[in-house]
Image (cartoon, rainbow, N blue to C red):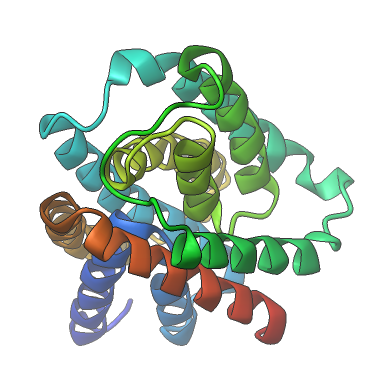
Length: 249
């Protein structure tokens, strides 16, 4: 049984992680080391992180949807295929050699950071889509969902750059749509963790309480300031994730 003060501290970590995750993704960089530091075994830490992170992402997604930045009807096919992709990735991960992702993913994240840092026309205004939204967002959802199931880091950044580059969404709408698909992908993995009994529920619930507040405040901040805050945070999170994957084992 964890000390109540430790649970309170983890709730604070959850709030901070939820705030960052709601705007740019990458909240797991904050939450997962805290869970490991609290003494949870690695698998239990991963499972509990999925639980608390899903709650914060759900709050952020709900906030973006209520403010009109997400159409759930338009995203429904992508949500179904994202769930299927993530579940498939989680089920086959043991049969795949994912060691190549140790280098490929950090390189891709640095590329994303450079794009968001130097692209001149990134704003909250929608641009002309390069691909039809209804046909190809489900493909994007399945592909990135599958990646999330087998590896995971940078999923939010990959969704965001897909919505911006391929489908012409402004930064705020891209962030809102990312939250919905990221939530669906997380839920697929969470189902597996729950049935395997790996979630530490008292810790997950404590951090989820913080995530609710952090996810709401983060989403409102992203909506209020738009590209001014989303763009630099995506850059920082992508670089931080890349460095962590390259140098922290």
